[in-house]
Length: 119
Image 1 (tube, rainbow, N blue to C red):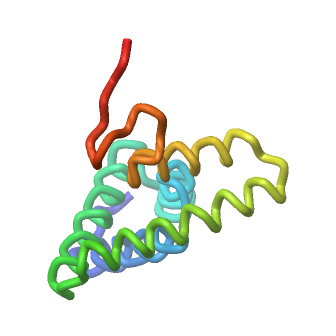
Image 2: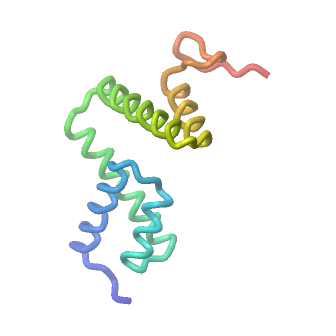
Image 3: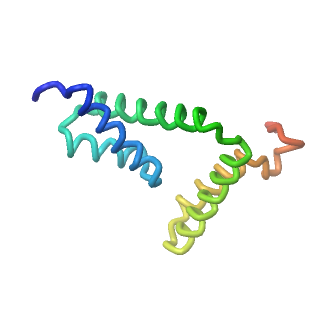
């Protein structure tokens, strides 16, 4: 298979960004890249990594406030938890709650914004 041009690579990264921002998992994005473009696993992960880096750069360039981003993230995690509950998917529900706990410090072992690990 011929090597992708810079324009094709940029288009692929853009498509992966769209998938990521639509809430698709890395595994799902990797499967899409492999099936659509015939990439190896390593090549797919490289493009996903570049897509995430571009998303980060876009956020920093736009000057999005960290509080706004946190509020957006919390809203999406709560929506994901609600969807997981409706679909009776306890693994996804626990995962969303765990991420909310980590982001917001809601757990029993959280004190004043920092995590305390008890053994």
